[in-house]
Image (cartoon, rainbow, N blue to C red; front, side, top):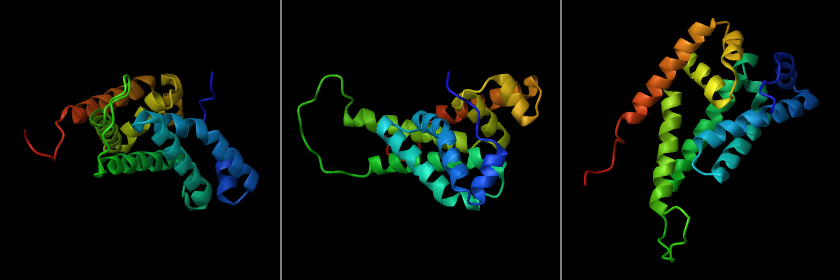
Length: 186
Protein backbone atom coordinates (compact mmCIF):
# COMPACT_ATOMS: atom_id res chain seq x y z
CA UNK A 1 0.00 0.00 0.00
CA UNK A 2 1.29 3.49 -0.83
CA UNK A 3 2.40 5.87 1.89
CA UNK A 4 -0.48 8.25 2.67
CA UNK A 5 1.29 10.60 5.07
CA UNK A 6 2.46 14.07 4.18
CA UNK A 7 6.02 15.16 4.94
CA UNK A 8 6.40 16.32 8.53
CA UNK A 9 6.66 19.95 9.66
CA UNK A 10 10.41 19.75 10.31
CA UNK A 11 11.04 18.75 6.70
CA UNK A 12 8.71 21.48 5.43
CA UNK A 13 10.39 24.10 7.64
CA UNK A 14 13.86 23.04 6.51
CA UNK A 15 12.75 23.21 2.87
CA UNK A 16 11.25 26.68 3.45
CA UNK A 17 14.60 27.80 4.83
CA UNK A 18 16.39 26.64 1.67
CA UNK A 19 17.78 23.22 2.63
CA UNK A 20 18.17 21.52 -0.76
CA UNK A 21 17.98 17.93 0.54
CA UNK A 22 14.83 18.71 2.50
CA UNK A 23 13.30 20.39 -0.53
CA UNK A 24 14.05 17.36 -2.70
CA UNK A 25 12.55 15.05 -0.06
CA UNK A 26 9.50 17.32 0.25
CA UNK A 27 8.83 17.32 -3.50
CA UNK A 28 9.34 13.56 -3.64
CA UNK A 29 7.04 12.98 -0.65
CA UNK A 30 4.30 15.27 -1.95
CA UNK A 31 4.35 13.84 -5.48
CA UNK A 32 1.99 10.84 -4.90
CA UNK A 33 -0.61 13.07 -3.19
CA UNK A 34 -0.40 15.76 -5.85
CA UNK A 35 -0.63 13.21 -8.63
CA UNK A 36 -3.67 11.47 -7.08
CA UNK A 37 -5.46 14.79 -6.60
CA UNK A 38 -4.68 15.91 -10.17
CA UNK A 39 -6.03 12.64 -11.56
CA UNK A 40 -9.28 13.19 -9.68
CA UNK A 41 -9.74 16.70 -11.11
CA UNK A 42 -8.26 16.85 -14.58
CA UNK A 43 -10.10 15.56 -17.60
CA UNK A 44 -7.29 13.47 -19.06
CA UNK A 45 -4.34 11.57 -17.62
CA UNK A 46 -2.03 13.80 -19.64
CA UNK A 47 -3.53 16.96 -18.15
CA UNK A 48 -3.30 15.40 -14.68
CA UNK A 49 0.40 14.64 -15.14
CA UNK A 50 1.04 18.15 -16.45
CA UNK A 51 -0.92 19.76 -13.60
CA UNK A 52 0.92 17.65 -11.02
CA UNK A 53 4.29 18.59 -12.53
CA UNK A 54 3.33 22.27 -12.61
CA UNK A 55 2.33 22.14 -8.93
CA UNK A 56 5.60 20.46 -7.97
CA UNK A 57 7.57 23.06 -9.93
CA UNK A 58 5.73 25.84 -8.08
CA UNK A 59 6.38 24.03 -4.80
CA UNK A 60 10.07 23.80 -5.62
CA UNK A 61 10.38 27.42 -6.70
CA UNK A 62 8.15 29.09 -4.11
CA UNK A 63 8.32 26.97 -0.95
CA UNK A 64 10.01 29.90 0.79
CA UNK A 65 6.82 31.98 0.41
CA UNK A 66 4.68 29.44 2.28
CA UNK A 67 3.70 31.13 5.55
CA UNK A 68 2.71 28.11 7.63
CA UNK A 69 3.93 24.52 7.33
CA UNK A 70 0.43 23.24 8.01
CA UNK A 71 -0.90 25.03 4.93
CA UNK A 72 1.22 23.01 2.49
CA UNK A 73 -1.51 20.58 1.42
CA UNK A 74 -4.17 23.22 0.80
CA UNK A 75 -1.64 25.46 -0.97
CA UNK A 76 -0.45 22.78 -3.35
CA UNK A 77 -3.94 21.40 -3.97
CA UNK A 78 -5.11 24.92 -4.87
CA UNK A 79 -2.27 25.09 -7.43
CA UNK A 80 -3.33 21.73 -8.90
CA UNK A 81 -7.00 22.75 -9.01
CA UNK A 82 -6.18 26.04 -10.73
CA UNK A 83 -4.01 24.25 -13.28
CA UNK A 84 -6.76 21.70 -14.03
CA UNK A 85 -9.31 24.49 -14.46
CA UNK A 86 -6.89 26.42 -16.70
CA UNK A 87 -6.40 23.34 -18.86
CA UNK A 88 -10.16 22.78 -19.08
CA UNK A 89 -10.63 26.37 -20.26
CA UNK A 90 -7.95 25.91 -22.91
CA UNK A 91 -9.89 22.92 -24.20
CA UNK A 92 -12.93 25.14 -24.76
CA UNK A 93 -11.11 27.57 -27.02
CA UNK A 94 -12.10 27.27 -30.66
CA UNK A 95 -9.68 25.19 -32.70
CA UNK A 96 -9.51 24.45 -36.40
CA UNK A 97 -11.79 21.57 -37.31
CA UNK A 98 -10.00 18.57 -38.72
CA UNK A 99 -12.34 15.97 -40.17
CA UNK A 100 -11.22 12.37 -39.79
CA UNK A 101 -12.97 9.05 -39.68
CA UNK A 102 -14.11 8.28 -36.13
CA UNK A 103 -12.15 5.50 -34.45
CA UNK A 104 -13.93 2.93 -32.34
CA UNK A 105 -13.44 3.32 -28.59
CA UNK A 106 -12.17 6.91 -28.64
CA UNK A 107 -14.35 9.62 -27.12
CA UNK A 108 -15.69 12.23 -29.48
CA UNK A 109 -14.55 15.82 -29.19
CA UNK A 110 -17.93 16.68 -27.71
CA UNK A 111 -17.62 13.95 -25.06
CA UNK A 112 -14.13 15.17 -24.19
CA UNK A 113 -15.33 18.76 -23.77
CA UNK A 114 -18.18 17.63 -21.50
CA UNK A 115 -15.79 15.51 -19.46
CA UNK A 116 -13.42 18.44 -19.01
CA UNK A 117 -16.26 20.77 -18.12
CA UNK A 118 -17.41 18.34 -15.46
CA UNK A 119 -13.88 18.08 -14.02
CA UNK A 120 -13.75 21.87 -13.82
CA UNK A 121 -17.15 21.94 -12.10
CA UNK A 122 -15.99 19.39 -9.53
CA UNK A 123 -12.84 21.40 -8.83
CA UNK A 124 -14.86 24.60 -8.49
CA UNK A 125 -17.39 22.90 -6.18
CA UNK A 126 -14.61 21.63 -3.91
CA UNK A 127 -12.94 25.04 -3.92
CA UNK A 128 -16.23 26.70 -2.92
CA UNK A 129 -16.53 24.65 0.26
CA UNK A 130 -15.75 26.23 3.63
CA UNK A 131 -12.12 25.51 4.57
CA UNK A 132 -12.95 22.99 7.31
CA UNK A 133 -15.20 20.95 5.01
CA UNK A 134 -12.78 21.18 2.07
CA UNK A 135 -9.92 19.97 4.26
CA UNK A 136 -11.86 16.91 5.49
CA UNK A 137 -13.10 16.08 1.98
CA UNK A 138 -9.63 16.30 0.45
CA UNK A 139 -7.98 14.27 3.20
CA UNK A 140 -10.65 11.55 3.17
CA UNK A 141 -11.76 11.31 -0.48
CA UNK A 142 -8.72 12.56 -2.39
CA UNK A 143 -5.80 11.50 -0.24
CA UNK A 144 -7.59 8.33 0.83
CA UNK A 145 -6.82 8.68 4.53
CA UNK A 146 -8.87 6.68 7.00
CA UNK A 147 -11.58 8.43 8.99
CA UNK A 148 -9.61 7.94 12.21
CA UNK A 149 -6.45 9.43 10.63
CA UNK A 150 -8.36 12.47 9.37
CA UNK A 151 -10.07 13.00 12.73
CA UNK A 152 -6.76 12.70 14.61
CA UNK A 153 -4.92 15.00 12.19
CA UNK A 154 -7.58 17.68 12.58
CA UNK A 155 -8.09 17.21 16.31
CA UNK A 156 -11.72 16.15 15.86
CA UNK A 157 -13.82 13.32 17.16
CA UNK A 158 -14.68 10.71 14.56
CA UNK A 159 -18.32 11.81 14.74
CA UNK A 160 -17.41 15.46 14.09
CA UNK A 161 -15.16 14.45 11.17
CA UNK A 162 -17.98 12.33 9.69
CA UNK A 163 -20.42 15.20 10.07
CA UNK A 164 -18.12 17.63 8.24
CA UNK A 165 -17.45 15.06 5.54
CA UNK A 166 -21.18 14.46 5.06
CA UNK A 167 -21.86 18.22 4.81
CA UNK A 168 -18.98 18.62 2.33
CA UNK A 169 -20.14 15.73 0.13
CA UNK A 170 -23.74 16.96 0.21
CA UNK A 171 -22.67 20.50 -0.71
CA UNK A 172 -20.55 19.28 -3.64
CA UNK A 173 -23.39 17.04 -4.87
CA UNK A 174 -25.80 19.97 -4.59
CA UNK A 175 -23.51 22.26 -6.56
CA UNK A 176 -23.00 19.61 -9.23
CA UNK A 177 -26.76 19.06 -9.50
CA UNK A 178 -27.20 22.67 -10.61
CA UNK A 179 -27.38 23.02 -14.40
CA UNK A 180 -24.42 24.51 -16.24
CA UNK A 181 -24.69 28.27 -16.52
CA UNK A 182 -23.84 30.17 -19.63
CA UNK A 183 -24.24 28.97 -23.16
CA UNK A 184 -27.60 29.10 -24.90
CA UNK A 185 -30.87 27.20 -24.81
CA UNK A 186 -31.60 24.83 -27.61
